[in-house]
Amino acid sequence: MSETIFTKILRKEIPADLVHEDEQCIAFRDINPQAPVHILIIPRKAFENIDAMQDEDEQLVGHLFSVARDIARTFHLDETGYRCVINNGSNAGQTVFHLHVHLLGGRAMNWPPG
Ligand code: DGP
Image (cartoon, rainbow, N blue to C red; front, side, top):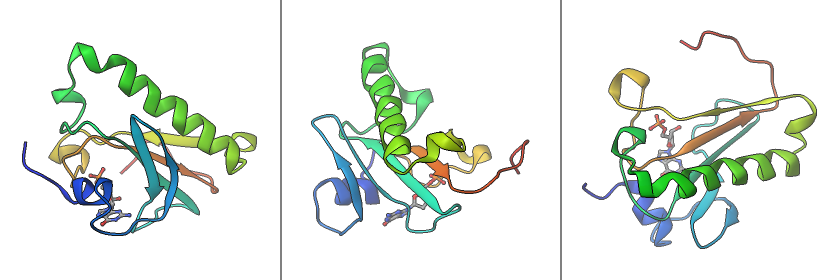
């Protein structure tokens, strides 16, 4: 896959408002927030989306959700609820083709999504 803007954020070539960093992933605030708290959790390993995920990535993808849970607690989102979203492909609205989990919270949300 070709490099994305997230590769540059991982390499710290462009700035991001980091909220978490470990050996497997980083998390930072979305540049265009759709909720009072809108954080992206991305793996250091670059692959496009869930469709490109390999069986060997199961632990890694699970880790992204563990980190989302921990960040949600840090921001007290667990008290009111929050949404974790992975957009997979163009029909889902994916614009950056480096897997990422959106963590959204701080307001009530509708279902189904648009
Ligand atoms: P998606 O549509 O699911 O591919 O989400 C991509 C998100 O990435 C979108 O909500 C905006 C965010 N984004 C794009 N470029 C940047 C950037 O340079 N910095 C940050 N912090 N977020 C970005």
